Length: 451
Length: 174
Image (cartoon, rainbow over all chains, first blue to last red; front, side):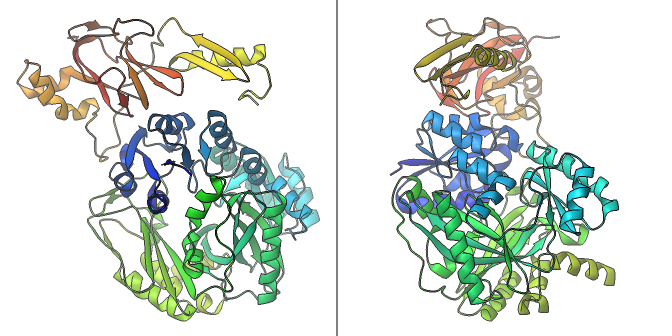
């Protein structure tokens, strides 16, 4: 087992990982930038090393800086969390080369799953239904037009190396193609350093349902049920729940089987999430495999009583899975992402010093955060500052509990999306399952249009 | 498999490494793979390298290892050096040279007892004041100004992080 793990991340996920390590008796090293020096992950880790400038490219994303910190502190493993280096194939490879254990997938797996076309091929080979799409990367707008004609509008233009909702453009008619192609290529180049795009049928009125998988190096792979992340804005998840209340049991059974099979077929080791889109008729389509911990993992932990991060660390150390799929999920859990942003001003990032900070508490409430009174929220990183998770026996009570929790939440000095989130939880579409992946955007358009 | 992709180093790979070394602030590089070892070093320090931490965005709190405009924190130390009790004067004339990397400080040139700099020594802009090693890579820390070393703030072999003050230099009057 590892003696000391360097947490190559920041924010709430770094705090989450430190807590898991503590309970396992593993030492922790935090890395940070000047902007993050007062963050809770720096305070809670056993050791902390300032690694660079505030810009992520010169700090959290810089292999050499991260590995130098691991080296001088004698850490024997690196936990990448979400984002940053978590899906970076080259980083995984460099870790292997220098003898540092990477608590994530090996380079070949990350390379394959990070390439949307290769990932889809793997899913097809495992017999999973996939969204109709172009088979190869498309070089220009003309090639895109030809493919779109074959697949049928509306279509989505997507960056081959994309993720996190970036590098995606919806095209509803041929005349929009040229501008969308240019925009997509530019965004892909800036965000992922690759300008390859492909085209995919745009499914409308669908839910985002994903399956949590854990797998070890002994051929064991289990699912931990599903999560429903239909409440999104611009492909960024806002509210997640476990398990989805709106997918029929028979469809779920098949989705779970498919998710386990694809992960097993690629000999995956660790935590992974297999994402699907599910339509009103119960048809489902494979989207992608995320080879890392997900932001929304706590809702699964709440309904299974399991610790996904600890399990991730165990299997990365070569141990066998210590968990199996429970008989049934217990109760219902909802996660709300609290972002430092102003929904009334185009979701502009809110920057400033946290002047007061009261988090909700009580039965069934869990908070994941790195902030505290006096902390300065800077513009350098993701705007998410906290996750509020509410668990209850029933979904109805979980929603009520969450709405009261958001009333209790009081963060001064900056603006957050908490009020909007409470409003969304109160919509009929959220309550009854009438929502779909673009519901929030439509709701916001109507809301501003009406006001 | 080696980082460069092949079992044995090819001449193109070595050329690639040399180019990388040239363009970097590194002065030495040891590369080892599949039983092959390559040691490269640069004679001259890379003059353009400035490790002085640049100014931060307004409002982001400056930490102890300060940029020039925040050098107020360095005043007591400068005062202890026995000169310029008038703080405001000391502020502008003393520059803290900080580490841009995480690693182990080497105050001496490799294989020699001769330190790069000592208190009282004159340094030129771009001159190496120490090297920081991590993962067998050596990065030079160079002085952003010409002046006199008034303190060496780290011990040989110390582990430093980004922003750690290495030496303080009193700038030459322009």
